[in-house]
Image (cartoon, rainbow, N blue to C red; front, top):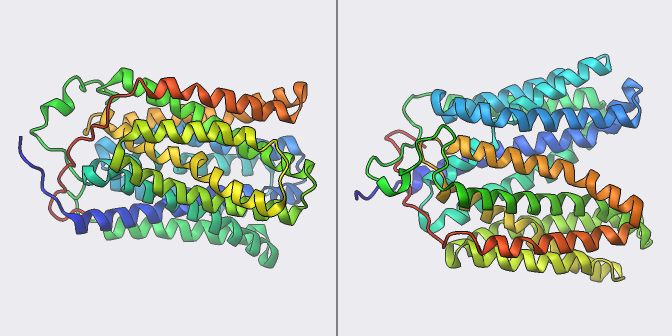
Length: 408
């Protein structure tokens, strides 16, 4: 078996560019969420229609992932990544001129389509070209970039909305995002730069000739099931944690501060867990993080002061968010190099839908049995990941694919 060529400098450059795209893709989505109250007030929307704007964006993003991942296999990953962000940013900029709810709904849905280009294609690209000994760290770093966007762009959106209004604010951020997408295309305008898989890896591609690009279907199904539960736990926990904190007597500023430290812990966990995956494999890390998460969400029910809660939520954020890096890197060992974007599209679509459904499902539990029942249920459901993780294959990352000459 031929040893694929390594180009660490080019891989690093590629990771830097794709991470920058992640900052803007996740940041613009979070920025839109922050601006919803301003949009609703300006267009005289109730809570239901304001929420529908958010729902339309997420559903469009989820629905676009598989088709755009398939398109990347034909048109090239760089083209779809760059044009996706340019489309996303352009739609956000156009949203600033929306005069009615129907027009705003159309533009946020269009923005969601552009946003759907990023996650399956970018994660597959980085996981495929990374050195197999450092794939977890590469995916972890990519994951952290999204958190930087989620933290910085909503803050910028809030400041701009205060200074110049939400319309000029979203138009400015959207225009900048589109410019980043176009700059990525310009910097990689020369054809033939997409990384190609080695032609001498029969074990990796055996049985992977299906359209979906999944060559270990059973393990992929297990990984996806873990992802659904993990994403659902995270989504529901973050949804109902503010209610729990308010019930404990924390004010708005304290709640915001506690969420900030939890975000910091989450970003740390994404990188640390990716690094640990490279050292000891994905199964031990998943077993550890999910066991601690299960205990941690239940432990939120015991009263703590603000200082103790800050430390507690930082630690909980590490395990609550860190597993995602393990899962995203682990999927790479289960998919075909040629059609991996499609497999990642399937994984992200299903797990994103789980993340969207979980808050509503746990909301029913909260209405019927109280807030404490939500966190007890979250802990018990999370424990079900442990036997699933034991079904995963042992840590077996394939060799990294070579990068074609001129590719970055």
